Length: 435
Image 1 (cartoon, rainbow, N blue to C red):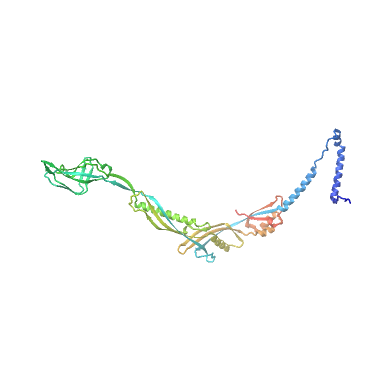
Image 2 (cartoon, rainbow, N blue to C red):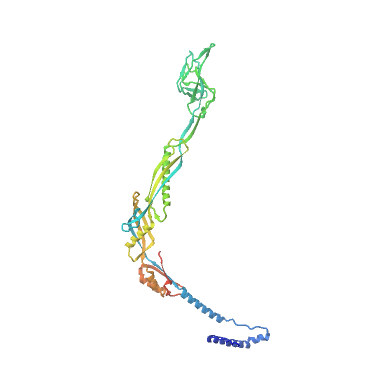
C-alpha cells in the first residue's frame, strides 16, 4: 500500500510563506506592467532584474547590533574604582638586641636572633726594593818590589804601604813585607826583590791597569825613594763598580701596611659575599685582625724585589632582614590605631649599633624608623555598596564613608556607554593608589 506524505508547517511559518507568495505575485504583476514589457520587446532572451533588499539587511544588522550590545552589557560590564587615601608619616625610635643565643623573635624583651660567621685568610704580595747599594770590586795583582839601597840592608814595609803607578793609580800591600837587601855580584849591585800581592785603593774598572812601574810616595825626600821601587809584569784585574737595589726599613714598613690593609679588605669582602641578601650585615659588626705578619727578607738585603706575607681572621654578626621588619611592624601596629593601615613599601630603617660584643655574639642596635599610614579601607564593604550605582553615586558613597581621609577618587565604567556598576560584586574592583 502506498504511503501518503504531508508537509505540515507551523501556523506562523505557514503565514509567512503565504504572505511571501502573495508579495512575490504582486511584484511580478507590477513588473510585467512596466519595464518587463519593454525588455520583452527587445527580446525573449533577456533576464528579469531583482531589487536588492536593503531594508531587510538594515533591519537584521540593527537586530544583531542590539543583541551584541546586550551581550557586552551583561557579560563584559564591570567597574574599576581608584581611591587615593591620604597618608601620614609616623616616626619611631627603639632599641633592639640581636642575640646569637635567641631562636625566635621575643617582642617582650625586644630581641631577635643573630647569626655568627668566622673566616681565616692569608695573603702574599711582592714589593720592589727602593734602597741603593754599591756593588764594587777592587783591582788586584802581583808586583815585584826591589831594594837597591846602599849600604845593603833589608827594608821592612808595613801592611798598607802605598805604591803609585806611573799612570797615577794607587795600590797598597795587603801584608807586612820585608824586602831583601841588595847583593854584590861580579862587582855589580843586584837589588833584592820580593813578589807581593797588592790591591787598588778604590773600586772601578779604571784600576785594571796594564803592566807598570811603581814608586813609594811616602819615601819622597828620603834616601830610600830611588832605592825602593816596584814593577808588574801582568795587568791588574777585578776592578769594577755598579749600583744595585737593597731593601730598606721603610720598604718593609710600607709593604706591611699595604699588605695588611689589602688582606683585611679581602677578608671582609669575602665574609660579605657569603651572606645572602636576606640578612643585614652592619659595617661595624665585622671584627677582623691580623694574626701573623712577616717579610721574606730583612732590611739591607741586596735584592730587586721581596715578598711579604700575612694571615688574618674575621668574625661577622648579622641578622635576618625579615625578623627585624616583623619586629618593627609589630611594634608600629601596637602603637598605632587599629583604624590605620601601614603602607609597608614606605618603611625606612636606620641602624645605629650601640655595642657589639663579638665574644658573646650580641649586638645592641638603636633603630630610627618611619612609615606611612592611611585610613583602613574595607574593600568588601564598599563593593557591596557600589552595586548598580552610577559614577556620581559611587563617589558620594566613598565620600560619606571615608570623608577627608582620601584625596581623590576615579570611577571607570566599562563598556563606555555603561552608566551604572554591575550587580555582580565580582565585577567591581577597588584599587588603592598612593602618590
